[in-house]
Amino acid sequence: MTTAATATAEGDAPRAERAETRDGAAGGRAGHVAAIERQTAVLNRNFELLYRRSDVHEELDRAEYLLLSTLADHGPMDINSLASTLGLDPSTAGRQVAAMRRRGLVEREADPADRRRGIVTPRPEGLARAGLVRERRTESFAELLADWDAEDLATLGAMFEKYNETVARHYLA
Image 1 (cartoon, one colour):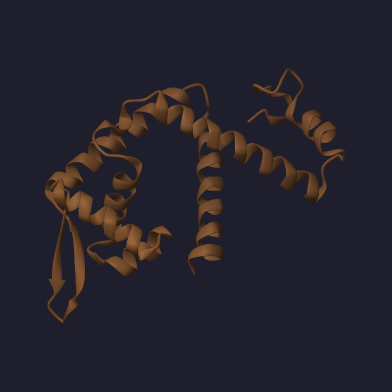
Image 2: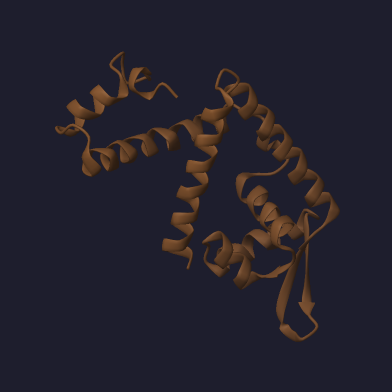
């Protein structure tokens, strides 16, 4: 990425110059962390913008998509494990699962080893819808990032993965 010379919605000044004047200090760890704080705020706003201006989530809302993707990746889980994996309160995960069960996206069966535990399994309809949403999201990102080179795409993917792993270690461990 040509980060030092790339301008964004904040104006025509390169990012490094904006960070220096906004944070009052050039570079250094504190300056980098301040730039990350600001950019995550913009990133969250941009994700909301993309969500509102897209029909990608007509099949499933974001919570349903993430829950089904988690079940597809990790296999059937009980509510507590699912909640822990997603960083949710078990009661929130239970409500989401109940709503998805009514829509025929998942099923919840008693665990044969412990009938008090319910095991949540994605249904074929839920997996098909999650696959469609994943496909649409991937196409949307491919279109948005069409002028990025492969190295920039790999760097962004690696940094998002590292960030998400750090959040999971810090808050979900």
